Length: 286
Ligand SMILES: [Zn+2]
Image (tube, rainbow, N blue to C red; front, side):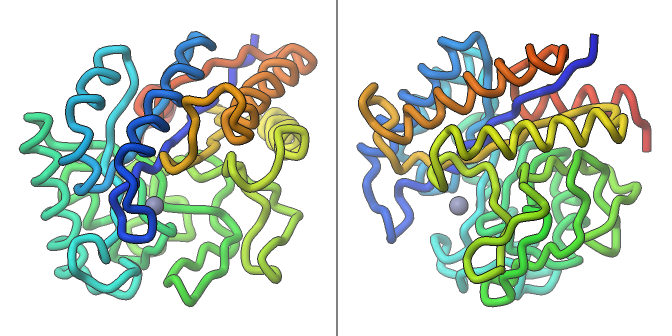
């Protein structure tokens, strides 16, 4: 039986200035973990340094439940300019290693999972991540063209792959497993700058179900060895409230994923980015 993974990533940034609501952040983390646990799954929380300091105890708790904790970066929250993709390699290394040190102090281990704020990167980013010990995560939304955020991913690979050492939009042999956000590659939103992606808060569950089904069918047709649906959300909504629309959307997305898997006779598993990257490494060596 074919298999597909559902790897939700939660970018945790409730302490960033535009939000500045750590109590909402805490409620969101607990609510998301509850929804995923109820579905016998696991997911990955990517956390900025400010949120690590605030919510260290919760992350330690949910990590014990099997969820994964990784690092998320928004340079402006560390006193730099907003977008990582405008910086050269030395500066990126400084920004990411400062954040990584805060993670290491809190959890007594170095982070290995990474997601980049706004997916703002350039061709220096992946080699910097590898140098700092990161092994997997998400830097890309394939088809995104947002030069104002230094986030250009036109034509980038749709599915899981090893990053390229010199060109972020190509598959390569760098020791970093990129798990791109799932998108509908034929759609455009935001005046044509972004494809419709699987961000929970973008549309409702029914709308997301079309993207999920389209992506699964394509991965089956192309015989992609490690098939992945990679949704995302943020810890900035009241996911702890059963009546909250975003929570209901997340529940609806999971329900759609399970139903589509049944319909297409494929086994679905809700799990962490780590498990997905591990499976990919087992099947495909560099
Ligand atoms: Zn973010």
